[in-house]
Length: 282
Length: 322
Image 1 (cartoon, chains in turn orange, red):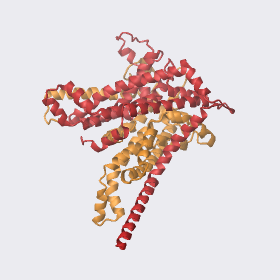
Image 2: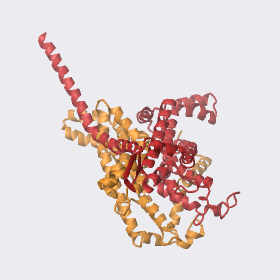
Image 3: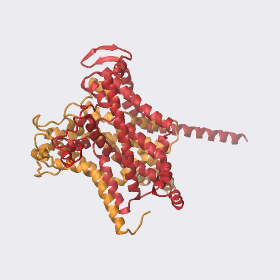
Image 4: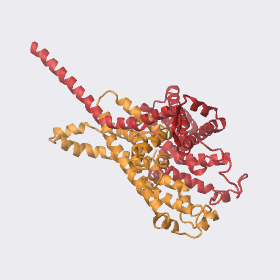
C-alpha cells in the first residue's frame, strides 16, 4: 500500500489532497485568528484579513478593561479542568486496573454505567444540580463545577484506560519478580512505564472534554468566582450596545485554543489511539 | 486417604478465599469511580423526575404543589414550542450526522491510504476541530457569516440568493444551515477517527481477492470495505446521533434560539435556569433523557449495535498502522 517511490503525478495529487484537508480543518480557526488582529473598523469592513494588524484586542483581554473578566475566567477554566481531570484519571486508573486484571461480578455493569453516563444529556442533570447547589452553597464555586465535570471526564477515562490496560503484558510483572525484583520494584520499573502512556492519553482526552464544557459553566456559575472561559465568552459584552466585542472575543478564543493546538501537535498519535480504543463520545 | 481429602478441602477453601479477596479488591478499586458516576448522574436525574411532578417556580419556592403529569401535558400540548424544538433538534441531528458520516468516511479513507510523510500532519490538522472548544467554533462560524463582520456575503455574493445584505441569522433555514455546518465541522474528525480504526480491521486479503476478481474501486468499497466495517460505522453513527441530539452550545451562541432555531436543550435551559420554572424545565429534561435512552435502545436492540463489543474489539484486533 505504501509505495516508496511516488511518481510526480502521485505527489501532486497527495499535495492537493493535503491542501484541501488543511483548509477544511483549519479555515474557521484561521478566520477567527484574523479577526483577533482587527481594529473595530476592520471588523466592520468585512474582509478576511485585517487591513491594519493590531494587538489591541489582546491588550484589552490581558491588561485592558476586559482583564479581570478574562483572566479570572482563564484561571477558573485551568484550575477546575485540571483538578477534575486529575481526580477522574486517578479514580479511573484504579477502576480500569480492576476491570482489566481482576475477575469480579459487576465489572461489565461498571463499563455499561460509564457508557450510559457518557451519553447522558448534560441539560437533564443541570437543573437539579442548579437547585441543589444553590441550597447547599456550591453554586458559583470551583467545587460546584469540579463535581459535575466528573460526569464528563470519568467515563471516557475509564473506557480509554480499561482498553489500554487490557493490552499491557502483565506477565512481565511476574517475570520481573522471578528475576529477583521485589513486588514494588516490578510494579515501578515494569508496569508503571507501560501504563503511564495510557494514563497520560486518558488525561489529555478528559482535559479536552472538560475544557469544552459550556452547559455546566453557564448554568452553575454567576460571577467571576467560578465562571470558566466558554461561559465568559458567551456573556462578554462590548463597551456599548452598538459595539460588538468581536475582536476581544476572537482574541480570547485564540488564547484558549493555543493549549489545544499544542497538545494536538505533540500528542496526535496518543490521542488518536486513545480515542479509537476507548471509542467513547468526544 | 483422609489427609488427602483435607488437603483438597484446604485447597478449596484457600481458593474460595482468594476468589473472595479478588472480588473485594475489585470493588474496592472500581467502587469509588462507580459511586461517583452514579452520584453525578443517577441522583440528579431521579431528582429531575421528582421535580417534574410539581408545579415549582423558584421565584415562589413555597408554592410547591403536586400536579402529577400536568407538566408533561403542558409540554406535549405546546405545538409551537416543544414540538417545534423537537423537530428542529431531529432535523439538525439527522442532517449533521448524515453529512459527518460521508465527510468522515472520506477523511478516514484518505488517512488510511495516505503516504507516510503525510499521515502525521493530516491527523494533526484533523484533530484541531476535535479539540477546539465548541463555543469557539460557534463564534468562528458566526463571525464568518455575521452581517456586520462576515466575509461570506462578500465572497459569495455572485451565488444566487446570497447578497451583501443577507442576514443569515434572521431566517430559520439560513440560520440552521450555519448551525449545522459548524456542528459538522467540529465533529467530523471524531467520526473519521472511529472509521479509520474500522478500516484498519478490514483484511487486506479480502481486498486483494476482490481486486483479482476484477472488482473496481467502487465495488471494492461498497461490497467489501463497508460491509466489513459495519460495526464501526454503527458505533460512530450512534455516538454522534446521541451527541448531536443534545446540541446546545452553537445554537446558544449563534441565535440563542431566535429565528425559529430553538432546540430541546435550549428549551430546558430557558425554562429552568432563566425562567426558574423548575417543574416545567425538569419535565423537558426528563423527556430528553427518555429520548436518548430510546435512541440507544433502538440502536442496540434494533440495529444490533454492540457498543461494548464494537469498541472492545477495536482495542483487541486493531492492527498497528503506525
